Structures are given as C-alpha cells and as structure tokens.
Image (cartoon, rainbow, N blue to C red; front, side):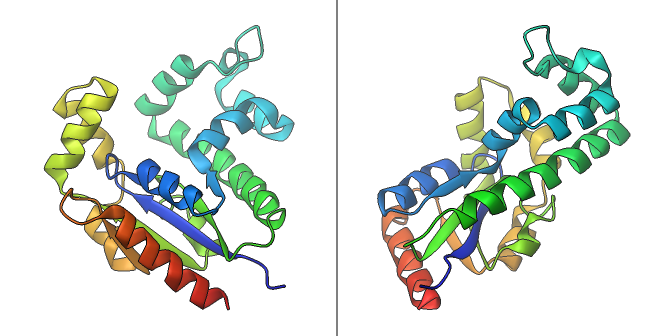
Length: 200
C-alpha cells in the first residue's frame, strides 16, 4: 500500500483554516494541527524545554511545569532576535513530531498538516501538495475581531507578521475560496477527489 501523501493547509489569519480542516476530518482525513501541537511540545518535549529555558531563562516555565506564555510572548514579541531563536527551536521540534505522526497513519490517501506559518517556517518544503485557504481582508478582519475580541489594529499587526496572502496563493497547488459566496464543502470535495487521484 502506498504511503499517504503529505499535504499542507495554510492561509492568513481569519481565512477559515480550522473550518476547512473540520470538513476534511469528516471525510476521514487526519489533521495535524501544528500550532496546537507546538504548545504541547513546548511542555512535553524535554529537548525543546531545555532549548526554551536556554533562550528565556528559568522564568519560561511556571512552578507547575506549564509554559509561562505571558512571559514568553512579552519577551519574544518585543525582541526580534529572541523570537527568531524561539522559532528556530520550535519549528524543528514540530517537524520531527509531525513526521512521526504522519508515518503512523495508514490506509488513507493523504494527511493534512495545518499551520498558520507553513511557508514562513519552511515546513512547506517537506510537503507534497499545499492548499491555501483565502478570504477577502475585510472578512478576515471581522472574523478575528469577533473571535478574539480585539481591535482592528491588533489584527493588522498579526497580519503583518505573516506572508502576504497573494504570495501564498501564488505558491499553492489548491486554493479554497472562503468568501461566503462559494460553497466551501463543494470545493473541499473537489480537492479531496483530486488528492485521491494523485495518490493512486
């Protein structure tokens, strides 16, 4: 039996990646949520914990062993060099973990790796196909402001940290238009069929 294809799914903040992934899951496709796993690995992976403590000091972890998120966020987002060091530690740990996870899957045409910074982290290089979820900026702003209870300036600051959507779209093998006008389910079923065909 052929090994499943490694497929990535990404998109700008507020594009609707999570919604798309839930639809793929209903089709029986397992999804690796890279950002969620990264948070778990920062606590569970001994090697990564040592690296993070080396970057931020003992204050990186709370007395109960949990990650001191507020402290790390404050330090990393006010110092670009620290943020780069953090990413240089976390991204390889996620890459190792996602590969182990992918290799444990069988009997399916492909797996999905969902990550906001798929291109920015270099993770796209180990994937065979990429799906980009796209939505108009106004819709993305509205979604994130409602979801996270933040103002427009805060959302724009986060958007500025990501690769421009147009650049992601240019590099994609498949594009999902999540604009409220085209059926997301219909588009996903078409992509699912195409990926099944590629896997044959």
